[in-house]
Image 1: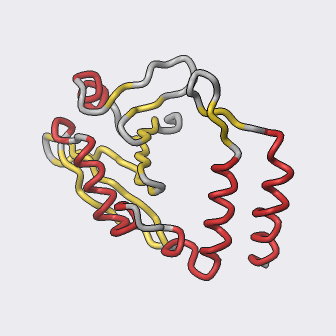
Image 2: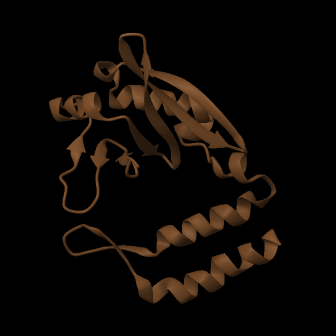
Length: 158
């Protein structure tokens, strides 16, 4: 069984613990694409799953995303053509305005969009910036955030 896919966040390919990250559009990125079969790409709060699929003598990348219960696909190109700009263009094709900074929450959560947005913002508020500029989770704020955002959302969803 294949392990879970690597994840590209904005312009960096991230692996599990103990492995170095790879910047997109570098020779290391294109070399990794040649041997990879799938990965996830996240930017601006939206996501796609990229999969390499054989077509004749070559293999091409396709991106897929689910929103509002529907899976959509988009052609991303050959490994050599799969740049950060092409991935972003694929997100825009799949998610429309959501990938260009428009809130995707309303599209995907419908009637509960406001509650889902509040939960997402509350979860983001759990992070602090450490002395070295790193993001770290502030567990002391969990009870406060849970009471303010999560409990009202759970009550509204039922």
